[in-house]
Figure: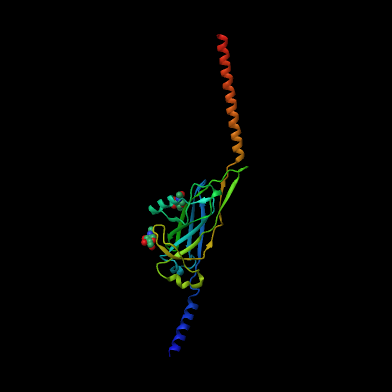
Length: 244
Ligand SMILES: *[C@@H]1O[C@H](CO)[C@@H](O)[C@H](O)[C@H]1NC(C)=O
Ligand SMILES: *[C@@H]1O[C@H](CO)[C@@H](O)[C@H](O)[C@H]1NC(C)=O
């Protein structure tokens, strides 16, 4: 009797696994855009869930999304600025690692920032202020290219519904629930389609040739100025001598 019972349980588990294994349809589209000009800019993210099939919106209703955006050495987020935006409830974002805002690109590494927001009507709109680091001047100057890759996308729902997705999504990872508390939450990375190409931000590099030209010009100006002064003093003394 017990033998038959366990076989039944086993078959039941196998059956549910087969039925639910591919039940989660993630049709997620992400648009990533770089705005403004100069050294201080703004990346915006538009996320749309299951646009084609609204009956699938159970998968994201009341869920929270987190983007993990990697930044190249030439680009950084300002932790103080993000702290202020969190306090004023404008944006929930926090750097994943320590950021030194003073360093030039050459002394910096890749960094990452989490941007967190609530899904509402199958959509999320997020943004993050970013800044470019200076490059050390080189002969000839030119432009440095900063490429900003698509972020990783994580989802967290108020219940265990994502557990049903089985192998269609990766196992959960644990990191901060949001920027406003130290508490850790369990997140699931979800697949998405990138609707825009990789962002490229070009930053001008200082020109060492200009530096030498400017330095040479300065020395010339000082020299000719001094010569003029010396000549004037000399002429003045000669006149005084003649009068004496
Ligand atoms: C960035 O863009 C968003 C959306 O357009 C806007 O709400 C936000 O104020 C902008 N932030 C900055 C620092 O320009
Ligand atoms: C941040 O997460 C904590 C823990 O889950 C929660 O209590 C708090 O309300 C959240 N704060 C915001 C601003 O989302």
